Length: 456
Image 1: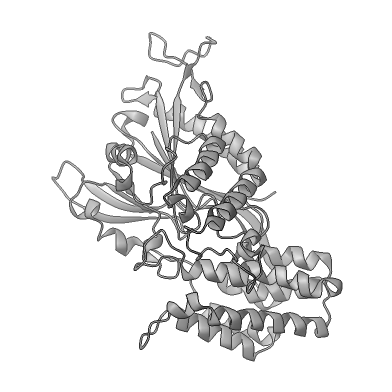
Image 2 (image 1 turned 90 degrees about the vertical axis):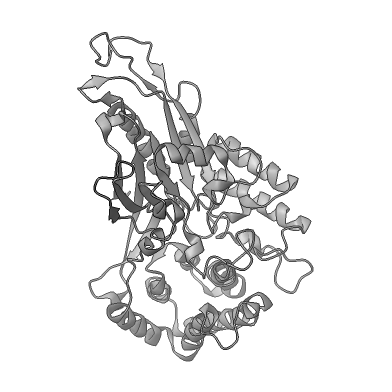
């Protein structure tokens, strides 16, 4: 049995909350139920499975959203940012600090996950002579659970080569109970023989999917480099609450800073200005202080656009992501928070959709065109979906091909659709996983998915 999950976005807590440890406990319980179900074979025969593979398909640890990147201010000697040359010693030092902070902040949830990989972490009742579960015996059979880690755009740093990064990966391996070696965690399945062979057994092709997102992947430089998304997250989303507290601490209520740190979890992303305004209103921030915050946001936007890293990404005579960001930032420079709110609501109603699909890219994968994969799996979009790609009557392997997105495990504060201009947000948590079977597991079932939400 193979389980695929992605986009957990576990953070160090400095830029919004990670999904709660409840999600890990829920997954652990559900995994045991899945193992029981997979042990029932055709003819209503019970035969316990002996192994489970769990593939973590990128954006598991969220290195991008941490204020530790901002420990040294811009302009000071040797500040480390995601786009700093990773061969500079300070880069690995900063990455190690962020990694340890994330592991500590999510210690209980990761303990629940890692316990599954230990001897006896998951056991099943043996079969009786009548091929039924023997629930009377105390000698339940252990199931080997293997965890495999592939990187995405928020944790690409664990793909970097070098002994300093090996040491950091060793800490991640220990915390999760991973089957990975301390070498670079794979970005694509073909970088790992064991993962490639594992996926082939289930007729699955899987990758994170960020390579189809030019804002979060630089096709010219490859995955061992930062993207515009890293720069925007660091210099705007992460930095705004930090600078607000530093420059205006005496004038701001404590609840406002905590609210601004949740910018990372706001959905849709276009609603970020609405969230800022809602926090200003809820914390009764005066018009004078609101003006100062607006000036601060404008300044950060201008500084972001002036960064050499951003300017280098701007292609001459071509409309690109930098041009789009410049248009948005200049727009927010011009108007007040209230006017921006009204514009955002109108744009969302008229144009915006969160239902981003990568299904068209699956049609171009070699594993699809050569028919070796029945399932093409991506993550990244957070939008769980199942899209039929093709059916080949008379062809024994495969007959049907599908694209499946692995969704996310995430805490959201989502904009309510009723009277959006009133800036009402609803918090909840989302949990999605995909399950694939081989041979006669689960009486010959090929796959199933589960996606749910809960609130605490």
